[in-house]
Amino acid sequence: MPRLDAYIPEGALSDEAENELLSKLTDILLRNEGADPTNAVARSIAYVWLHRPAKMFVAGEAAKEPCYRFEPRVPEGQFDDARRKAMVEDITEAVFEAEAGAYDKDPIRIWVFPEEVPEGTWGAGGRIFRLADIVAFVLGDKETGRRYAEKRLASRRGVGVPA
Image 1 (cartoon, rainbow, N blue to C red):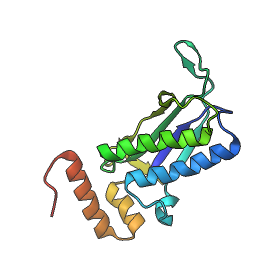
Image 2: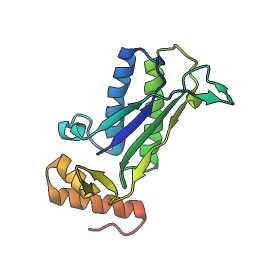
Image 3: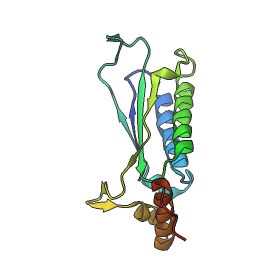
């Protein structure tokens, strides 16, 4: 159940560019979590929320160009250094594409905070979902979900990977 909170100032992008960006963020989120963005089941649980900051100040003054903040969150075990790096790069490039040259191409205006939600703390639908539950839902196989989750979490935590 990946999710992404996108903080985009009102009017920074055209409606069409913003909608395209939000859709593209779904693909970026899924791909960098390790899921197939074309998998309809995976897409059905990928959420992107748009937030409108009322104001943005830089160095104590109103920002002269739009600044963006993105907070992708995935279950523990889904990120590693390469996936985090790709998430930051992909989102930054997607924003530049959406801006279409309207502003300076300054990556410091785009902040990305990829986070993992600790195992056993992802709540939705009135219950806790673990990585194994989510993978089993997407792939349609409980045993595959369990094995995948055990391997990812063991690797992430630096312990022996189960056979």
